[in-house]
Image 1 (cartoon, helix red, strand yellow):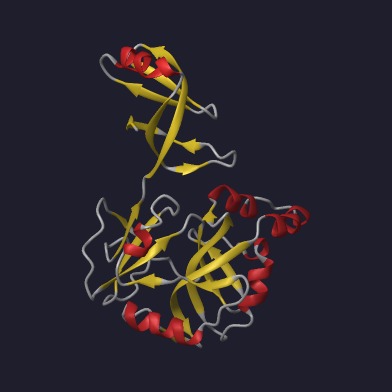
Image 2 (image 1 turned 60 degrees about the vertical axis):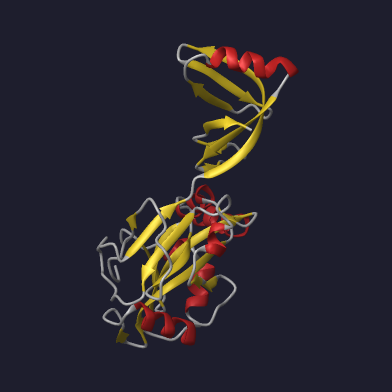
Length: 260
C-alpha cells in the first residue's frame, strides 16, 4: 500500500462557492492510489495492477517516483457504471481479464498528486498540489486529469446524469486516511417522468406499473381511488426519484414523488 487515501464526509447541501473551495464530479468507480513504478492499489490496499494492464503501461510514461490519487471508472454512454467497473476488478482468470479490457474499457481519473519525482507533497495545500498536477501530469488515452470548478453550476446541470459532487478545501494538506470534512461529498438524487399503465392494490396504497414494467410503490390514504381516477384514460404521468440505472436500464430504488 502506498498511502491510506483521504476520505470524503457526507453532506446534505452544497455550500456556497467561495475562493477557498473547489467542486469536482463524483465518479462511480473504484478509488485508486497509483505509482509510476508502476502499481495500482485499491482504497483498501489491494494490488489491482494486473486488472488494468493498459493503465499500467501508460503510468510508465509519467514522471518517475510519482504517486497519484484518483478513481478508475468504466463509462457507458457518458455515465460511469459501477457494475461495469466490478466486471473489471472481480475476475482473477487472465483470459477473462484480457477479454474484458475491450468490452469494458477503464479510465483512471487523477484528482491529486501525493509524490512527485521523489518529493513528498502531502504537506502542501491542495491548491499547490493541483498546480503540480496540472503542470506535470500529461494525459494519455486511459489516464485523465479530473476537471474541477470554482462554482458547482456546471455539475448541477448534470444532476440527472452524474453520481454527485465533491467539495474540497484548497487550503488544506492531504489528510491521509481521515474523513475530516475538508473533503465533502453529496450524492445527487435523479428525477424522471414515467408513464403509468397499470397498478395493483396494496394494504397501504398501490404499486404502480410503468410502461417498461418497472414497479413503484405509492403509499397513503385514499391513494387507490386517486389512481383509479387517473387511470380512466388508460395511463398517466408520474414523477419519480431514483439512485441510478441498472445494466438492464431499470431505475434503482425508484420512489414516487407526485403526478406529473
